[in-house]
Image (cartoon, rainbow, N blue to C red; front, side):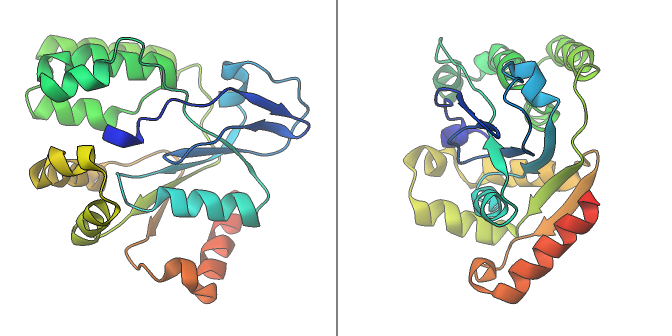
Length: 222
């Protein structure tokens, strides 16, 4: 998740049954609990499902479906970029390291992008090592979710979706970048992972496919 998917979260809303954000990228679901968990750390450790995948893979589709059908609240990553590090990175790759550190401490960013940027030469050996050390030191304090839904999609379909929705910053990045990111996501393994292929654009309009997906999710959570 990068480019236009790095969206600043709206103000935290406390509801009687939990925490809910408006968000359209990676999603975290928390089952209802007493509204005493006001802290970000407390919310993280209550996460039951994470929806993960590269840009345009279909995360928003599954997020909305799960929230509606399983009656779950949605909690997004909280991204703060007071120094416009993402914008600076788009113009000069030397900003990759401070940008990744900012992602890490503000939304506990995953290692997929850090590893990719290291392989592309945007991070030095020392910078990547420092990032991993900080990541691991933070990771020990975070409880793993019950289920991580890793959304897959054929590359050509992803490119079709990117071009179809017409977000200029995504288009300007170029096909080579998206291919590198696609390869990175296809090679990664997440804890408690459930792999789901959302290449078929008719999925959301096919009740049989939806019910099968929901049944699989319930089975993984049981």
